Length: 218
Image 1 (cartoon, rainbow, N blue to C red):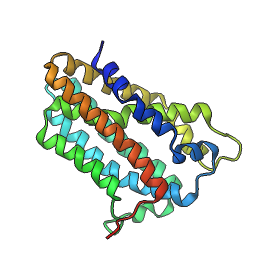
Image 2: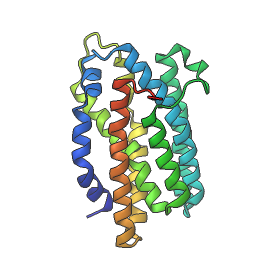
Image 3: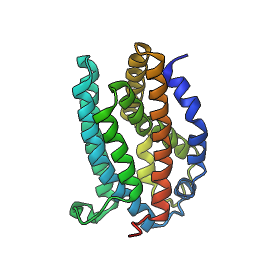
Image 4: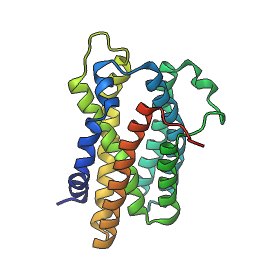
């Protein structure tokens, strides 16, 4: 069994809980409040700015040129596509600056990923960044299949989940993870899975925090 299959099975309970989040259910129904959606978009912008840098850092650590090129492409596409989406839904996004702080959950997620880049092996780091590709795509597929199309204010944003280019990126990221896992020790593969599970939980936390419009308590 490929590492990716094992990792997905290990974190599948977390994925199922993501589908049960009020944020996802109300997004599908079109009943999510504009304030909650904008909070999510703004936090996602902060997250993606860090995530793009993390993907670029990963590219510098990959031995195969085709793997490095793939992650450079992932970083560029992430910033270009997501920025365009954000600007569509939040007019004030162009004014996004340091005055808008990352939520505790956003900061936790990006800090965890940065720590993996700095201190963990490239294999474990890949396991950590994969949920943002894979779970996001799977959740997107679920939303597309179950959405309420009539007068859903988030319809155009939901439609972007179905892009073939993003699907190809997800498949390539999984393939690279499997290739490196196959040539790694059992101990390393376990650490990859642990990082994958942890960041799957971070994905849950990110959507949950957006629904709650999470603020710093002090």
